[in-house]
Image (cartoon, rainbow, N blue to C red; front, side, top):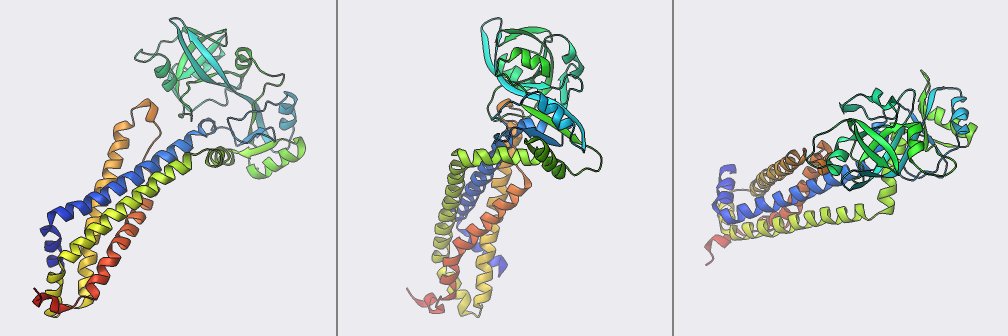
Amino acid sequence: MNEIALRMLWGDRAKYLGLVFGITFATLLMSQQVSIFIGLMARTASTIVDVREADLWVMDPQVQYIDEVKALPDKQLTRVRGVPGVEWAVPFFKGLGVVRAPGGVMQQVIIHGVDDATLVGRPPKMIHGRWEDLRQPNAMIVDRAGWEFTWPGEPFEAGRVVEINDRRVVIVGLAEASPPFVTFPVVFTRYTEALRISPGERNRMSFVLVRTAGGEDAKVLARRIADRTGLQALTGREFEWRAINHYLRRTGIPINFGITVVLGFIVGAAVAGQTFYLFVVENLRQFGALKAIGVTNLQLLGMVLLQAMLVGFIGFSIGIGLCALFFALTSDMTHLRGFVLHWQVVAATAAAVLLILALSSLASLRKVVILDPAIVFRS
C-alpha cells in the first residue's frame, strides 16, 4: 500500500511540487523571521551580556532598562561596597557621544566607561592591542563593527586621533563587542576618561557592578543591597529580560514580526491544504478501486497520511536548509552578526509544519473515509 501511495503522489508532479513548495515557503518564512526577532531582542541587552565579571547591576530605582540611565551620586558606590556579601563593587558609565575625525567623519557612538583599576566592564574578546592600553592618557578602544562603520574599507590603525564631544582621544585597540540594538559604534575607555569626555549632570555614575562573595546567593544579596541603600539591584539575567520586555511592551517589533510569522503559517496551510485536497479529489477513483478490492479505511488513511508526511518532511527539510544557509552566508556581514538559527526555532517550526499538515489533511481524510467504492463504475 505504501508503494502505491507514493506512486500516486509522484504521478501528479505538478501538485507534488506545489505541496513541497507550500511547506518550504512556510518553513523558511517562519523560521527566518522568528530567528531574526530573537536576535534583535538579544541585541537590546548587548551591554549586559558583555559584562561577564559582575553578578549584579545596581542602579537608580526608576531605571527600567539598560538604555534608560539615571545617574547615581558617587557616595552610593561606597554604600554598596559596605553591604555584607559584596566581594567588590566598581562604577560603570554608559552614555552617548559624537566622534569627529580628520576628513569630515562624524559618527554617534555609545561610550562605555570601565573601572580604572580593574577594567571590569569590558567585553571578553580583544582583536588588536591590549586592554591595559586603556591606562594610557586619553586612550580609547573601539569595537570592530564601529571601526568598519566609521572607516569602511580601511584596515585598523592604532594611534588614530579623533574627537569625542570636542575632547581629544586616541584609539589604542580594537575589540569584539556584542552588536547593540542601534547600529552605533561602541567605544571603551576608563571610567574617569568617560566622565571627562561626556558632558552630563552633576551625578555621573550610570551603574554599580557588583561581585558576590563566595557562597553568597546573588538574589539574596540584591535584596539586601536594595534594603540598605534604597537602590535597585538586579542579576545580569534579570536585567537582560528587563531590557527585552521593555522593547516587547513599548515597540511594535513583536506585532510586526508576529504578523509575518502568522501570514507564513496561513499561506503555507492554505496552499498545502488546497493542493492536497485537489490531489485526493482527483485520485478518488483510484482510492475507490482500492476500496472495492478490500482495502480498509484504515489502510487508505495510512496512505493519505504517508503522502502528507513525506511532503511535509521534504518541504520542511528544504525550508530549514535554506534558512540555515541564509544565516551561514550572512554571518560575516557586520550589520547582520548575531542572527543565528536556534534549535528551539527548528523544533517550533517543525511543530507548526505538523499542524499545517494536520489541517491540510483533515478534509482529505474525510473524503476518503466516506468514499463509495461504486465510484469506480460511474462514468
